[in-house]
Each structure stands twice: as structure tokens, then as C-alpha cells.
Image (spheres, protein in one colour):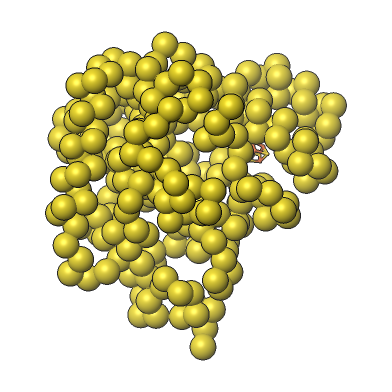
Length: 250
Ligand code: SF4
């Protein structure tokens, strides 16, 4: 038996992520209608204060598609940490061409990155959890704070199925920083996500075809193995919660 066929949530008869994970004939209409209603409600409630913070992962591609397909006036933004895969960044022009939308890109402060790398090395994340978190802090958390400045709510692609740490994710919750965090597909399964991708022919990160269900920075992401959690490929060398702090509550 091949490694792929052993994955508990994978089929055996196809070579890409849609073939592996989408379920033929799955009726998604109820899940789509409910997710759309959550986005519409949030848009009415928060107006210009609402933004989608997209990781460019497949869940966020579904949400961007819902926003664009239904012409919701919700800004879309992403973080370019300076360590992303080319495949991830390659989605930006695809989104812009397909939907005619401009994705706002937030990057870390150059001087902070240069000083950190000079002091700790380019491989600092592997030296200790503290240094890994410091790298996430300056490459992710600081630009995220700028992304969310002046906003009252943000939209994420979190799903309860992704990990034990995310099992309680609510559709609308306090982010611990005085904002609402909206996760409209929190109750979707992996099969439902990929069935949506198939149904609407969405662009997606080609690394999902290589057994990377959760894609972060290139040095800190690897493919997962048989029976591992969705986020097991993130900071795989650590015995940690597999979170970078973007979704931590203070
Ligand atoms: S995921 Fe890795 S490279 Fe990216 S910010 Fe965190 S430690 Fe740095």
C-alpha cells in the first residue's frame, strides 16, 4: 500500500489535491449558503472595518471566492513574510486576474529583518522556540498589526478540523485584541473545502498537491506523513502548539 492510500482522509485514485480530497457528489449548498450569510452579516455589521486576512491557503481561497463571486465589498490582504514559497506568492496575480481584485500585501519592516538575521542568523528559527517566535513576531505579527489597524473585524480560514488547538473555533469570536474574528467556514471538512475548489475551479497553491495541507513559510513547512494532523508539517521540529501567534488570544 502506498503512503497516499494510507492517509485516512485520502482517496487512492488521483494525483492532485482535488482528486485526493474532494468527494464526488457532495452537496455543499447548505454549507456555502451559511458561510455566505456569515460574510454578508459581518460586512453589514462592520462595513469598512472588515478585512479578510488571507494566508493564501486553500481555505482562504474559498473565502476570497465567496467574497468576489457575491461582490461583497470586503478588503482582502495577506502577509508576505519574505520567506514564502514562490507557489504561494504566485497566487497573488492569479487572484487579481481572476477577480479583478487588488490584494493588499503587508511585509515586515526591512530594518528589523536585517538586524535580526545579522544578529541571530538566517536559520534562527531552528535554534530555539524563542528565536522561532521572535522571527514570527517580526515577520508576521508586526505586519498583521498594521494590517488590522483601524479594523473592527477580520476574516480567517480557520477550521475546527485543522488541529486540537482549533477545535473550538467559533464563527464569530473576540480575538483578544478588541476585534471580532470571523471564521465563516469553521465547520467545513477538508472534503468540503476541496469539493468547493473543484466545483468552482478555484486556483490553489500547487504545494497542496504535495501533501502540504497547511502552508506557511518555506523553511518552516514540510509535507505531512500518514496519519499526521493537518498542521503537523508546520515547525515540525518543535513539540509546540503549531501556532505562530496570529490566532493566539492574549
Ligand atoms: S514561520 Fe518560520 S520563517 Fe516564517 S516567520 Fe515564523 S519562524 Fe520565521
